[in-house]
Each structure stands twice: as structure tokens, then as C-alpha cells.
Image (cartoon, rainbow, N blue to C red; front, top):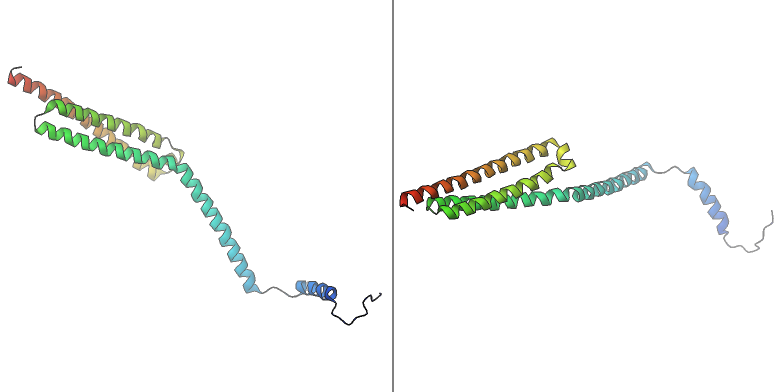
Length: 167
């Protein structure tokens, strides 16, 4: 209606308004649009994967720590049991009873820690993990029974040695 400016300079407002109209008229390039969608998908997928990984680490952390305790207790029990057997071979029955009792305590501790693992929600829902935990439980129970048998055998050997020596 009225032209306020008398100068012959460039009218930036008019250019901006016409550019805004052109933006909606000109179609987007499909290649650039596809690339943006792919980057957006990868970004959200990466964040989702990272969140899931953090979730798994937090909730399975207790499971992993208990697994380490079971392993270390079973390994110490195994070494105590082997030492008790070597003491029996050397006919030191009283010391063998002590080490077989220590081995039995280690296996009992490992068994109790394994029950904590078995009660874990994720372990009870994944069949492969449940089978592995059951196999470890059977192995630890067998080692407990073996340590009791070695302890009883060492007691019997000590009594026989006392009878034969005339004490």
C-alpha cells in the first residue's frame, strides 16, 4: 500500500517472506531425507541399546558377584580336599580330618551362594542358565559328600592306626 522506504536498497523482509514460501514449494531431496532418517534411527537404536546394556549390568551384577564367590569357595574347597587326601596318603589322619572339614565348609558356603544365584529372576527365566546352575549345584553337592566321606575315612584310619599301634 504505502512504500515507506524511498531508498533503492535491498528489502530483506520481502526476500525472507518469499524464501519462506519457496521452502514449502520446493520438494526435499530424497537422498538427504533418507540419510536423516537413518541417522535418527541409528541414534535412537544406540541409546536404546546402551540403556538396555546398563539395565542388564545393574541387575546381573549381583549374579556375577555371587558367581565369583561360588567359584572361589569351590576352588579353595578343592585345594583343601586335595591336601586332605595327600595327608591321608602320608597317614596324618587327624590333620586330614581338619582339612576335609574345612573343604566341607567351603562347599557349604558355595552351595549357599549358589542358592542366591538360583533365586535370581533372570536365571530362573533363562533355561540355559538354569541348566548350568543346576549342573554346578550337583557338582558342589557331590564335592560336599566326597569331603564328608574323606573325613569319615580319615577318622576310621586314625582309629585303625591307634588300634594297630596299641594305644
